[in-house]
Length: 278
Length: 119
Image (tube, rainbow over all chains, first blue to last red; front, side):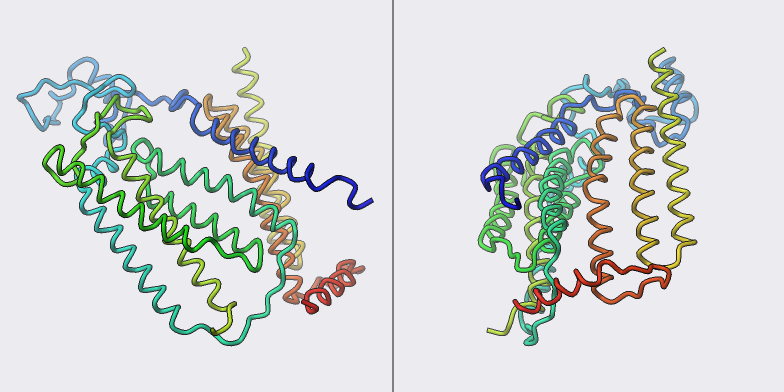
């Protein structure tokens, strides 16, 4: 009675459930209209520091805004409002101002931040590698619910992390939180099974390849635009997924690097107390 | 017309969710031991949060796919996490409330424990 359904059907069923979940979440994340019904006025992007958005927009529309005490930064250029999904060929096409500063104008600083994280991770691994405990901690096997649940949740969490760092130039996310989300999904895999260990060579390859990719993108900018980490791709229309030039590429590299590094830290911290001295 | 109906449905869903979230908070304060509190904290907050997010999705146009995704993710993860917390605390020897008379998990727990030591 227990094993009537063949193993193959069970596997096919599980795979199809996971596939439907992945496709559904992917559609929910990518294909929906952005800002629809949330009343994002395209013209307030420069003015949202002022709390009263409606008055600011109204006075901007009637052309009275700059006469009321607030002086524009440049008076030699006529003011044209920036509108989402319409304005093209900006200096930097990122809809998120912070991302355009962090990755584009201060891209070299972000490279330094990634290096700081790399140094911190190497320090942690050196400290933990030195003293592996001899006694084996007694741990019980997690239940089947935990095992299946973490594996299903991992696919969704991985997809969400990828969404965060791919949309880094549109949303207040980016490579660092995306990588942290992916690492937390891998932590869930650790909790789901006792002897789990990720592919160490794969983690190392991901980490070094994404670090190299960051520098190579910077070098391409150096040779084509004559400045290290300069934007060499078209900026596109503001608000689109394919806009803002190389910011998405750099954030993909940063996300992969941060995710693999934090996963390696989780790996060393968990397996430290489990494995015996060798 | 349809917008008004959907909006009022959203309001009803949000108020149901708020009511159940209140019951969950009350249960965490009033119930005697960890397992009862876990039950109050998980069951009622699962229903409450799911109903609240769905109601918000109906109220604000365009947020429905987001809220359905959040609700599905909560339905997947919330019971699993509470299950693992309850299992770990039972195995760690958290004492039951004396009113919990038949401890049906005890025999099963013994079996599992012996299996675990055989490994």
